[in-house]
Length: 244
Image (cartoon, rainbow, N blue to C red; front, top):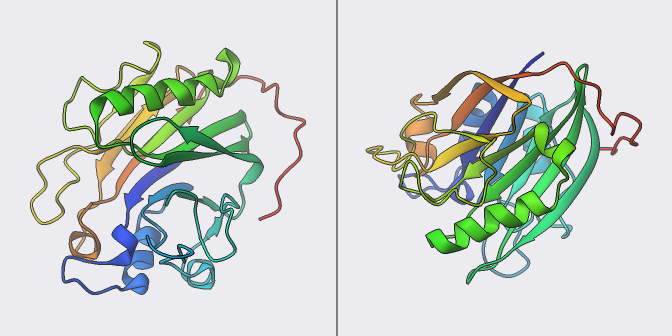
């Protein structure tokens, strides 16, 4: 059972040419060929935080649907975080995690049914201070029991420049995957966009999308990971699906 997960900080669909171009952002998302996509900075910052990408555009140009994590009728995400899933996937549950720190931050998650049980995906855009990031990882882990952590993937903009620090809030059993340098898109020098895999999830391959559109659509490049799920029954297999 292989799934492709991707993460992309779209910078509110504003490219390096300083044009806001949602069509270009969605074109990049579609090119990833992912089953699950975590987006960051998906809503505008001011006022009611309207979405930078229209739901209708996503539906028309991709095979993905928006997971209902927004708490506002005009937003696509929560704290700028959104999740998209392929239309044939079974979303069992969605939720929000308030994150500690000096900035207002939050994570969103969805439990996705697969032939090998439930996978929990958590989309994040972590804080700018390392101490806050450690606390934020620890808070995310507190939301899930040991059984759920086994098949959990945290993905997003970790905002961490170090290859080994800032992740101390994660259990030692988690594997942190840095697909490659994804920031700044004009001259990538940092692996800010990453995945953290629970022990029941195995990495097959990972990479950074460096296509022509991706290199100008945002200040981040998208990252992706092909994952294999261990064949285990899920205690959540009877949960009700969420209508998307």
